[in-house]
Image 1 (cartoon, rainbow, N blue to C red):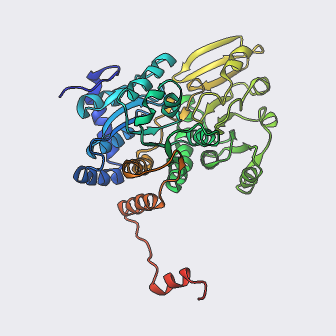
Image 2 (cartoon, rainbow, N blue to C red):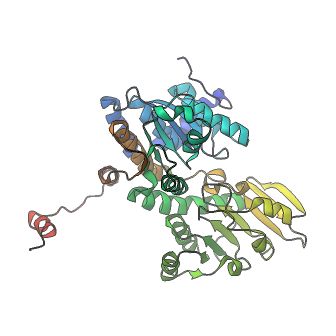
Image 3 (cartoon, rainbow, N blue to C red):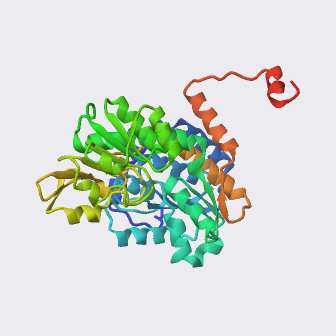
Length: 418
């Protein structure tokens, strides 16, 4: 097999990567069933797809499904620290997918990888954090005319797309995959909730029970993290700027405080806002010795890492894998996970495969829909039928059966006269 254009660390890791992908696929029945149909129907025949995603075994399962449907796929990593080099190798060597990703690559290399994926002159995009869209609208506008549409998987990315659309800057139709009920409930709440706490425990070895965990932001991700932390025995403090979410946190049994008041109390700080400067120098100076700082938002701007370095007299790198200790003038040390990047994927292994089975099934069906759709530039909702199909297929795979409305019940619900 002639290999496609690629930039990976070591093709010799392909066998190891293949075993890990096959292990993950055993927990991804929905994507497996979808792949069987794609292989028969070939709905993506001749369609070039460029994707910016976390290079994990679960992502490889999605990539294989798209290729089974006829897509010509080129992948770039959406986070250098989440890239798994053995997975990248197997996708190139065994599946003929153009992968541009290396673990730990610097910002220049990361930008080159995005360009490498876009050099395939894609018809469709799959984005994670709006990076491909950003490059297309800034440095690679020459490719815009050939791109029909795309899908965005993250809360941060959808937020940016809506801002672009409001400013009249978005020149593509983009589907808000993140906003589907399945993605919000399963991936954002349950996936992020579990994987973020898993990353903290793996990286630090901390006993969560008895600690005070401060969760910044109480959206789908933040509420999931808070629920898991409380389930592990932590006392949870939430910080918020939106009244309705703050009230939800109170009714869920959490304390709600401004970050300035929460900073001296917390043992573990987890940011999930999608905004910048959530934890800054004013908070660092009053935090406990040994406080853990971790970000579960997409970009590495929620913890002011530059400000943390300025406030420190010494930085002790890699006191544990993925943990840097910042020593303050009085001897206190603050522990930053994964350089302030997305902790659950950089210091952990991301969402469980059973979660990504649902998330990526929605992604694959959205790509199929976009391949045949004619949409105007802007942010579009994913058809509800896609979400319903994924939910029903997952429930069937789990052996869960549903009630059905009787004709009388259906008529009652559809008539105002009954």
